[in-house]
Every structure is written in structure tokens, then in C-alpha cells.
Image (tube, rainbow, N blue to C red; front, side, top):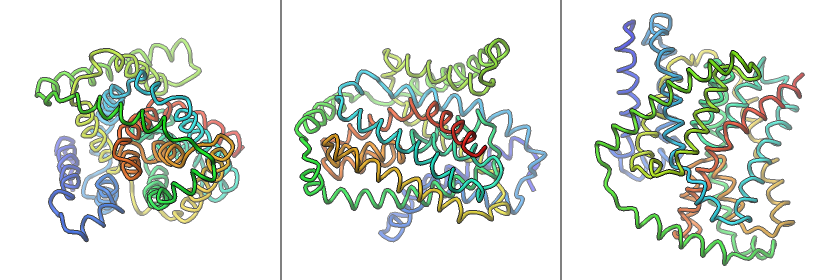
Length: 392
């Protein structure tokens, strides 16, 4: 049993790295199909939950190392991730794409509140907190989920339910959308949608992406890591100070909000164009996931079916609202599907779906997913409070 804090952290990072590399090591057709249903981020969580359950490390002895690293790394990751979100590019998507995105965001939020109202008696005490964190993920990405988990102080055991629900329901939903995009002509004809503006925007964005050919330099990695850690430290200090004067939010929530503002503002400056933000933020994301998973005991997961049913109810409500809005607003299937997956799947899957429709529109999927990072944390916190009121 591991009791040394540094050995515990080193083991987690190494295990996460191995899981990330599996799709590159095993390239067979069967293996790749497996990784489609169980990507590395899911394998990391499940693998480390198992190791936690068999007590490979002492939870009490390693708690100090876990507490000292998790939130600081989380805030650094969120900041670096937000540097990729240039709001000026998002505006270029046009009103219909933005309407589609926010329609998806709002309908997901409504789905969570309605599903919680139906299922809260079966989900356990304070389940609204874990669902609020998951809502942040389904509006934005994993970084938003982790930020809300920290802000609401969601325990790892309850969070494990939400992550199981996330991995299974979201995977099924991606499969559904990849199937549905094949009916684009019929859907667009039914909604009477005009797609020429989307095609033009996609072509323009693709040209801009190809123009950025700067190599990733080690100096970039150094400045991003340094700035991320510094912003994390300063934001925590400011969050504590603001909380002492304005206790409307707790220290963690103020910290997350400060990090988000700094990330969005600096993304509009030349600093936001530093190459390496995606690579560094992804590494930090996997490390933070590994840390959280290392405290989740599988022995406590006994109510998964109720959580999975809750996830399916959320998705059904979301789909029904999106179809209704598509008909009323004459939105095409690309706008609806990519907006939906930009929320629920994030940057990992939205570009894939966009590319299935047209390779020229992959950048649209990426930018829409990045917009989720901006709204995901605030949206998830709002929905969490609404669920708390509904659950009474």
C-alpha cells in the first residue's frame, strides 16, 4: 500500500499517461472500436477507481498530497483551456449558429432540472451537486465539471455516479447523432433550413486554421505552465479576499469566476495565440481526472441504474426541445447536432461530428465547443441551484 504522497502522485500521473497512450499502442480495428466506446479519459477514471477500491494507496496518508494539488492544478487547467476561446471568432459564426448553441445549452439545463424533479428521490442526498457538476460538463467540458465540483465541494463517491452516467449516456448520444446526421437532407427539407451561410463560415475558418503553422516550442510550454500556475495562485488568493467581503459565493466559486474572466480576456490578446494551449490543458485535465478518480471507491457505487435513467430523461427532453426549435426557427441539422454535441461532447467529439457533415466545418465544431468552456461553469452552477430548489 502506497503511503508516500509523492509516490502516490507519481503513480497517478504515470498510470494516466499509459491510458492516454493505449490508442497509439493498440491500433487494430477491434482495439480502436473499443476505444470509441471507452476513450482514455473513461479508462483512467475506471482504472483508478478500481485501484482505489483495492487500496493500492492509503487514502488518509495521501490525502494531504491530493488536497495540495487538485484544486491548484484544476484552476491552472481551466485558465489555459480558456485561452483557446477567442470571442471574436465565435461572433463570426452568425446569429443562427449562436442561437443553436444557446438553445442546446438552455434545453440541457431544463432537462437536468426536469429529470431531477422526477428522479431526485431515487438518486440520494445532495445528488443535485453532482448533477450540477455534470451539467457543467454537458454545457461545456470536463474542465467546467471539475470547476463546479470544486465550487460545490462534491464528494468523490457521489461524483462517481455522475461520471458513470456521463460516460455511458454521452457515448450513446454521440452514436445517435452520428447516425442522425446521415438524414441531413430530409431534416433540412422538413425544417426548410438555408445552409449557405454555414458553408461560407466553415470555409473561412478552415483557411484561418491552416494559416497558423507555428511550431510548438518548449518556451511556449514553459510560459503556459508558469502563467497557469500563477493565475491559479493569484485567483485563489483573490477569491479568498472577495469571499470575506462578499460571501454571496464561497471562496472556490469566486476563484473559478476570476480564472474564467482572466482566461476569456487574455484569449483576446496575443497571449491567447501562443501555441500549446490545447496540449498543456489536455495534460492537466487528465492529471486532475486521475486525482479525482483516485479517491472514488467502487464499493460505494450501488445506485447506477437510477442515474443512467436520469441521464436518458435529460437527453430525451433536450432532443425534443431541439427538434421543436429547429422546426420553428428553420435550423438545419448541422446547427442542431453540432450545437448539441459542442455542449455535451465538447472539443473531443463536436469536430468529429462536424467533419462527418463536411470537412470544411470542423473549425465550426471546435469553436462552438470552446464557447461551452465560457458558459459551462456559470450555467452548471445556476442549474445546480435550481435543482436544489426543486428537490426542496
